[in-house]
Image 1 (tube, one colour):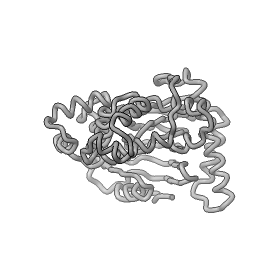
Image 2 (image 1 turned 60 degrees about the horizontal axis):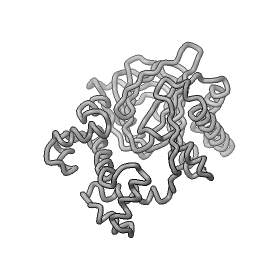
Image 3 (image 1 turned 120 degrees about the vertical axis):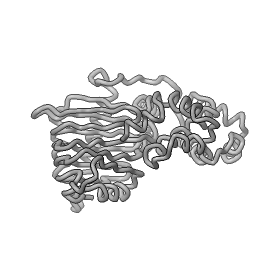
Image 4 (image 1 turned 90 degrees about the vertical axis):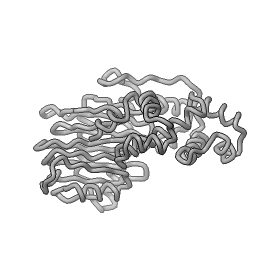
Length: 330
């Protein structure tokens, strides 16, 4: 999907809605100047794989926040400085002259992502993202699943690597194929996207020392049964915001409460009560950033008697207060 060359707040919001994102666009100055001028595209390359290309100039200070799903996001920045917030952290990355920068984001669960635009900043980049379920569906052995587990060992991380010529060439080819409706070009784009993801995963798994963020930790634990994990996860998701209790979740899954508690502890390394509380706190991030609810409202909706109790729980879960989390995305 190619967007208008002069992008404003409204058509950016509409485009993100069409891509299936819950989003919020904040324009810092009340004027009619475009947010971005140039080439901007969003493409669904294949089921579970998306591509985003950007080549132009940010015209004013603004931010665009979306709720993104778990997965791996591979980015090659050809030109300019890129500023974004992922979870509780904010990053500023810059491409050197004639030397593209490769950075890879890993997100283990639903997370807030905010792109911060800066006035008169020229940016050229390409992004290919693949979701977590797609990766696990390709695992045929326990060893493979352990490798993927290690990638998603933490909620969100950003790694930077030297962008070798081979990856630069792949990215340049993808740029030429974006928005093409030709059957052959679509197949070629899918092939190149998977190739880019594959080579990036190899970097994450074999050369973590090159990254500027925390090195990957290989988790030596029993591999999870992905389909059963998803079933439990979905049940907690459904009941979390209706203030459901463990007995209701156990009935839904057709197991006893003691069995449910044991399964959750084995699979997620936390108690069932903690896991249910975490699911509710995960929703708080979306309410605070995308829906603009006050901290008091979110605290009430999640069933906390006091705002201070909610604030303490949120900080323990995410390492940042609700107020500072919202500031990172504004």
